[in-house]
Image 1: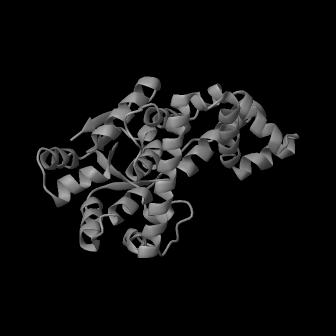
Image 2: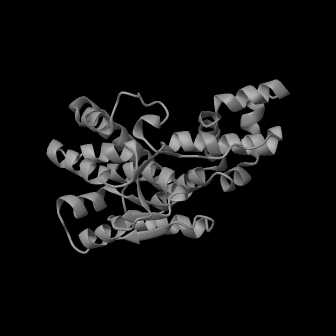
Length: 276
């Protein structure tokens, strides 16, 4: 099956605003018998930001009328990637196949068997949730803007870069891998330092983490553009999706440029990237 991801702008243009040529091109994609739409909780959360429950539910229902699979969050995927890197490079253990997709929503990690996509969407529509997510994305955007300024002024030193990477790696070591490491005689510090000392090799073997790295660089390197909260949402969604789908369709020109930039940096990502 060919797995295709449509971003929020594409859903709105195709299913709500009926804009051309987006509407026709998306219809052509969905008419193909071998296509599965890739959905995620992050995408549903974006639907919820439309400020209109009727439109948000219409976008979800439009997606669910097709063959669908669900992709895990970028944190879950990155833990699997780093876990495999540690197994192969330090523990000399067999790696586990990375399976980021679930056939049903309730099969996603941490989901509840009685919760349906519409339930999650409606929870995202709650004002308290929306306010919290908006604040989180604004803070993330502010961090990217500060990184942009620091990079421009030469303030983002190798020491600071190492501190940030150390914190990231600590959060991406799976518990089951640590249990395996401890049985062999490695401490948590040993595992983290191994990843830190070999960070370039680790990134090359972790496509989602590598995507996040280059997409963040792309956003921080443009001195003429301030990062918006929508950029934060795009980043968290794209780093999970881009390395693992066959086609990525975006209605956002800036995001499209960022994805193309990532692909130039990571030629092993062969996803077809379109802008409609």
